[in-house]
Image 1 (spheres, helix red, strand yellow):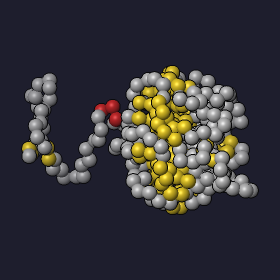
Image 2 (cartoon, helix red, strand yellow; image 1 turned 120 degrees about the horizontal axis):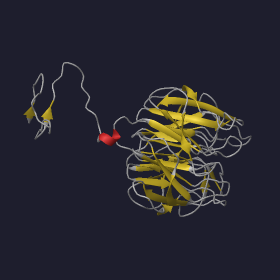
Image 3 (cartoon, one colour; image 1 turned 30 degrees about the vertical axis):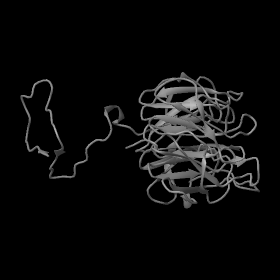
Image 4 (tube, helix red, strand yellow; image 1 turned 135 degrees about the horizontal axis):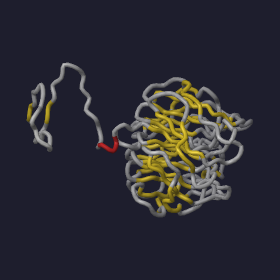
Length: 345
């Protein structure tokens, strides 16, 4: 083991100091070394794309998740798009599917650290909307949705490349739409939504292993069956959080937030409440905080609220989403970030 004790380093030439072996640091204060490579430093940006204000929009907007405040303009999707899906690595975010206004199989991407319009990526195996995506650093997975008939298709992309999606497997549900999704670096989770068999407002949680392909497996149940939970899921590397949705008859919008421990299987547990009940909540996260942007109440609202994922409790006000064409509220905007739970810290 090498031990380095210096006050200053000088005269080291152009290469800088070179260390071999394990390095031990002794400090008078707490010292936390940066994690990840240099492209991953300064992460923490959440991005929302598309959705509906009552009409479909192509707006992309972003916020720094570790702070609070209103979103900022990022750029535009290729077309106005209601209910797309989003997956992301630490550098790139991909939007897939949605309605433009016809249901589309388009996949498009942005580099998260910059601001710009999207660039074409490829196509889904099946055009669909009312669905959610999850991802790790390498692979993005798009869940089942409406084609417009309800289907069980799950497919995937390699985020760092461009190209068409490939078949991953099928949902365990009898055709399902509007499930919330989140991930750890190894597992993807899909929760709730609507399926064609009873109970149609389903409470099923299922999981996949992101690095492999295959059908989803049963995980457990959320606290109550809810429809239009997409895209209301986010996570740290260990805990998944699901927010909002529409409950069973008389179909109230709910403020429910549930959580699970992703590495285990089992039923979800109550976490707390959103500041405003609604469905179509656009959720994203960093390693500490889950942030929920927009929703239908039944009117569209621009509310953004947040929770600390490692604890339980009610959401707090974060800020507002930016207005688009005179409309201030959004529902069904896809969201992800460069620091969500599917990415190693």
